[in-house]
Amino acid sequence: MENTTKPITGKVDLYLGVQWGDEGKGKEIDEALSREELIEAVIYDAVCRFQGGPNAGHTYEFEGVTIIGHLMPSGCLHKYVDLIIGNGVVLNPVSFNKEYYDLKSKGIDVIKRLFISERAKLITYLHPFLDAAEECRMGKNCVGSTMSGIGPTYRDFKARQVPLLGDILRPNFMDQLADFIRFQMNVLKMYEESYGYVIPHDKIEEKRFEWFEALEMMFNYNICDTSELIRKKLEQGKRVLAEGAQGAMLDNDFGDYPYVTSSNTLTANLCLGLGVPHHAIGEVNGVIKAYVTKVGGGSFPSKIKDKEVEEAYREAGHEYGATTGRPRMCGWLDMVALKRAIYLTGTTGIFINKTDICPVDTVKVVIGYLDKDGNKFENFPLHLEDVYDVETIEFPGWGTGAVEVTEKSKLPQALINYVEYIEEELSPLGAKIKLLGTGPKRGQSVVW
Ligand code: IMP
Image 1 (cartoon, rainbow, N blue to C red):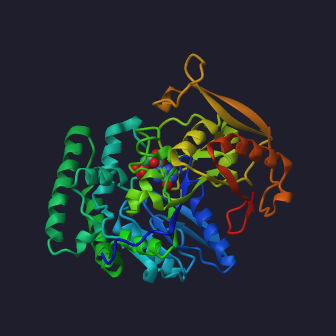
Image 2 (tube, rainbow, N blue to C red):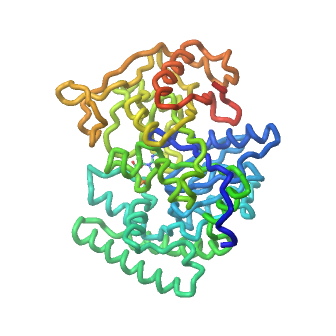
Image 3 (cartoon, rainbow, N blue to C red):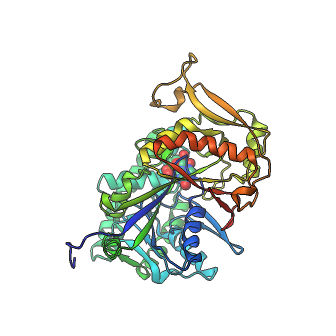
């Protein structure tokens, strides 16, 4: 460390999902970077990931190029912006390399501005199999994981087993890895002997080969102390953008446990996942959709009961997982979950995506959770499976009136009323609406 006495004058602004993930964070980040570029003042110096791994899928489009980022921070299209993968991230060399070369084939080579934390956690080729084995053990109560090995990797990290990315540069790495792989194979055998999981040896062999090949390529990237890198930027008064993955309702502690991901998705984890002090946190921007989607197991209180209506939302909003292709469940905007997420994350700015999607005449909003006796829950329930019904209010729909609109004055009045309602409900929590997304492409949005 050169000098630890300089004051921090820069800030880390956060964009995070405050529903069940897939809110459109990638598009909002691309949008935030572009708006500043338009006035030729590159405000953000870096985009950083601080949690999660290849389970994430962040989509954004510009000039016919569609990018789906899994591990790569959503600043690829902005050539002056550094891309930082923080220590809180779990990284699989296979998916990471694939993403890097996919970008390169589109003419976007990020190698010179890409920095990966030496403390990022390594997903081995056996972690996804352990994910599958665990889902097999859970049977019908399974979490519906993305099978990327996220849960087993974070578990092994907490148990101080998992190799860190920087370990690959150390002389004893192959021994450390061999020992860990032996341990993982034993765990897989336990799943086979005790829970009927069949170890797919051929598939493992195939993945082992791919993984070691990809591991070799990791030496080409800049693996470093990214906390120090960010500290230097903050000392110079630079602004850095942090990109959350998944959403507040999938937080390991405060989501609908156990139907959650295995990292903390809330603002509190930003400091741990990047190695920055709390006083460096700047604005907290919460991204939502005008409705809600969820993938995976567990309850979803605001799920649209009418199958045709749900399907209409799925089709209109192209609600299929960017990582797994799974159809997403669609639900009404859930103010109960949203208000809690806003509180837990300290969100001050709200970005509402997909306001262009409204395939119904009447839009509902969930304002209360009811127990089996029809009584309203006073506090957020420990398990969402205890929610038997929901209390809703209704708003007139706005059809296709908001598609690709870019000026507030051209928005349909019914949408304005809907957004004003959300604003009224959330402003006591200190959250203000900033932008409405009206289409998937950069620039298709309205400043509120
Ligand atoms: P995992 O993170 O793969 O272990 O999956 C745990 C739960 O989080 C499952 O219900 C997944 O569907 C969900 N999940 C994980 N990543 C995402 C995401 O990026 N968007 C939406 N849901 C996700």
